[in-house]
Length: 401
Image (cartoon, rainbow, N blue to C red; front, side, top):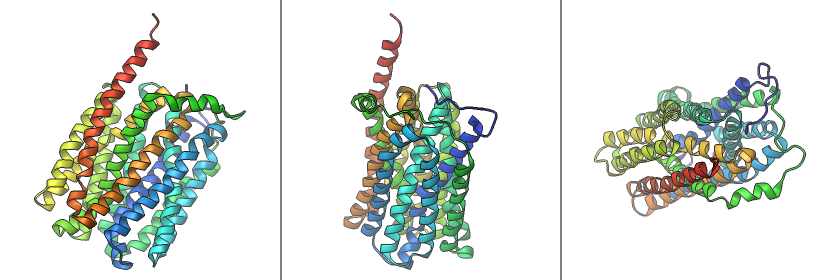
């Protein structure tokens, strides 16, 4: 079941709606990469430790979680337009505040607003993309959406790595705020399709999906995958600098390389998902990510750690969007609500893991903290095996006897 999109050739057509989702997820990519990229600058400007930095990740992800819990029922009942527009505006405001922040308290407040806006953009753009496509095109479209996420995530460390000395981090943050206003304008002027349940939200039917084991299996894949992405994206620059003495510029470029690898992997995955079962693609990706996580955590040199970071980006690429495609295919009547559940569970993982890595770093070393992705990749493999069994059983039950 997909959303009925009126006037497909006009301003409310699929192409323009999909373009608006690409713009929003691009900004969410900036949100996800920004905190990890500017941490070294914040250390210098304000002065706080690894534990306080871990609290920033925890706070931002908790704010994302709050938004995620509510966006799904809201878009199923009222549509996408307002949720996406307000989310983009919040992100722009947060970047402006961060560009001028002079105390830890101000940074913490900006991070809350950033998380609230980022959560709406993440959930809204993924749910919209899922609704605009069906069949094998859904998985491909969600992987392509992830490419635009990668462009956004790549842009920040690349700018910081190449233009930090010329522009300075505050101006780069101001530029990010301007870019965040672009999707806001698009959402304001674009006509969106009507909400799926505009005449009243069927609470009992929506609540029924919460009892479905497949929903929770996929949710916990996203739990561990979000933990991986937030931990590696948030800490790799600091890990390279503090453990191996890599300079701030080169460390930022390695982070850019990580996001470039994620983006490239999703380009390949958007084609593979048409020929390979979703569960098989996730299993292969998790196995590659596991090998790369081991290399990164046990690396004897900065070069080896950097290679592990780039390789793990390739492994991570397909896991999140392909898992969402499984959710979209199995819960099409309540896409927003189902995505709210699984993305919210994922964000709990993303909220806890980088915070835990910071605590481990403070107590021992960041190298020890980066064992977290190793464990998470093993658990993703196990969960994916169960998801494969559940989806095959559904397919068999759906066939006419």
